[in-house]
Each structure stands twice: as structure tokens, then as C-alpha cells.
Length: 123
Image (cartoon, rainbow, N blue to C red; front, side, top):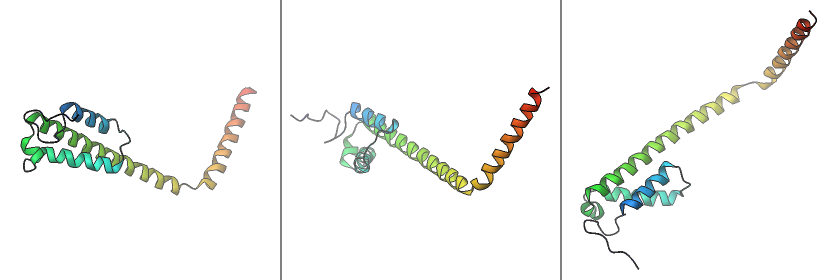
């Protein structure tokens, strides 16, 4: 049995509890399929758009809640882009390392350090 919308809620408007759940889903980076993310965002945008029937009939509290979820999701998206750029830069830096030079140099330092320790132990 489908619930009727409460007074002040538009047809198909999400209750506050559902808005909180959606917000938590984005904030905790739950694995939400891309097509579902698109549907959720379209719905949230409709709630904050006063020219859309959901937004026109949504109470201020619902509009504010939807706005907060959109802002949170946008912030997380920007953070993820920054992490992706950082990872890409690190991967490029790793590619520039010439391991054929580093390994022999490290081996030489290890042998030198070993000889120093042996010399100190003989004193």
C-alpha cells in the first residue's frame, strides 16, 4: 500500500528520513551504481527547483535537506577528483624512476653500512 504524500509534500517527494539516508549514502561513499546516482541527483535537483512541480510544492525543510545533499555530493566529487589527480601524478613520478640505477646504488650503500658496523664491532 502506497503512502499518500503529507500536506506540503509534492507528489513523489522524499520524506526527510529518506533524504538523510541518501545523504549518508553519498557521505560514506557507498557503492551506488552511476545510473542510480543520476536518478537521485535529478530527483534532488527537482526538489530544489521552484519551477518543477516537486520543488514548487516541497516544504522549505525538504528543499534545504535536498540542497545539503547536493552540496555534500558535489564536495565529495571534488575531493575524489583531487585524489585521482594526486594518484595520477604519483603514478607518473613512479614511471620516471629508473630502478636499474637505484637497486645497485642501494646495494652499494648497504654493503658500505655493513662494513662500517663490522668496523665499529671490532673496536
